[in-house]
Figure 1 (cartoon, rainbow, N blue to C red):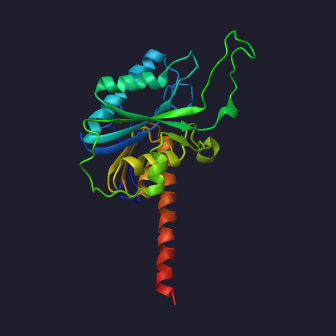
Figure 2 (spheres, rainbow, N blue to C red):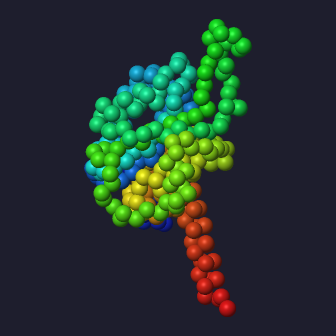
Figure 3 (cartoon, rainbow, N blue to C red):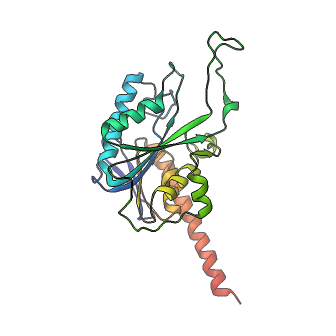
Length: 270
């Protein structure tokens, strides 16, 4: 059952639902931007984040298939996933999930490397100062860019809002910006607003429908609203749905305040 969260913005829909149980219109989504659970034993609530690697890939295959169904024929998919992981054994997560997506039917376009610069947070070194068994850990994540049938976008408003400087910088496949604070947002694995913002402005038109099937604290939805897109979010945990609703409403209030101030300046300008 999908529980709908009433929001002040009709261009944004938030549902409390498991992505595997969600009911969205096929061929209705222009762009998906998401970061699924990484299966590294993060405590999200009721969701299990400590599956065996085989179970985790089966879960990924199931939800990727739903996303494929929901995308428009010229729809794009920006998938933020780890390069690899060593919790519970070394695994090539990025390569394995990309292979799964291609098996489902997605076409591969490119991979953006996100340099988080979090090497200082390392706690695992393997064999310290020894060739016995050292760990090599890259302080990066991936944003794998996929599409459904055709890469060239033919639907939508044809209105882009990306600047020359943004286009030149973001089409370079190495993105460097900081991650988001768990404490500040109140979610165990948030990603920064900069990530969905870049994906949305680079790969969608104004007015397009943007989906995040793991909406979490609502960052993708806020980025979509900030840049004139329609937003749809799915989130399994009621507590995170409420957090996302609060953050979205806070953004809408701040936007209205900005509009009110701008209108006052116009009205009372000498």
